Length: 132
Image 1 (cartoon, rainbow, N blue to C red):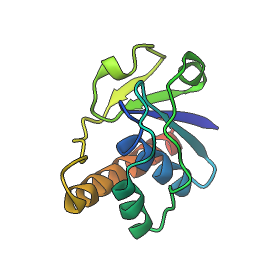
Image 2: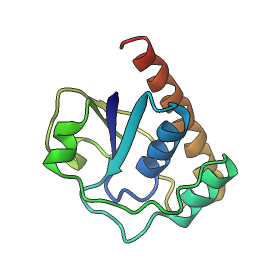
Image 3: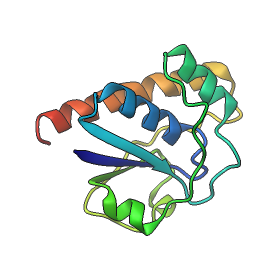
């Protein structure tokens, strides 16, 4: 099983949504974790809300500090738009999705970001299924 690590600074929004989507949509073919280098105290409530609207509950998720072990265990690390400074430990494969941080921008921006993340996660899963 492939393992994906989603990384953003606070691990409170984009990376949590990506983890939720991948784990819900991959039917146990791929597993996801998420982390950040400056984890927030909690997942952003608007991220929880918009994911609930999509039928995915991330309310029990907690922001986590990225570790070297997490990176080593991952087959791929996906940065959510915060650049390589968020993931100073470089594994075999790193991809940056360059997704805007919706924090402080209201519910509509969160929905837009959620939908962008879903499309990217679906494409990632399809690529893994094809052996890419």
